[in-house]
Length: 218
Image (cartoon, rainbow, N blue to C red):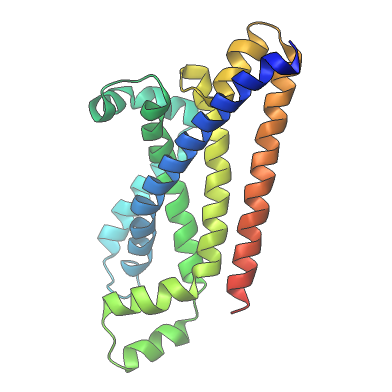
């Protein structure tokens, strides 16, 4: 296969991967951030201790993190069909990507928030700040470098998940590598696809690291 034949295949596949990763990242942040905050707030010694709630949330998160992604994709097929009406295509695989990434990101959020000094929180409490205010104006801003670093790791993981989704009809670069590179024995195309994925990961990782460093210096 020549470069002229590969380029019309690579560009749409790259856009599909970007679409899957972009939407799943958005939903992961919307769901995973409050879940990670809840893990800290409801813990013993947290802003609103509720060990029973924390245990339930932690159990659910641990289950989500323990399932291999390919097993998760198959296991939630009925849920995916219920949400988007189909189990094939880029839009459909946003669902398992999000479900797989939310517990992962929530734990990273929890870790970042726990790195905030207890004295900072205690000072805010001494000034009469409410729990919501402490979360919004103390915990999250102070943990922002760690949150950005965690989000970067999550996005990189989602890129890997999206490539795996291609094996089950999710589209994107993973699907291109399997259907054309592997099944049609187009070794060069498979290598180029892998290189494109590596470049995307390196660019995003470098960008996330740079943003996290700048935030940590403020």
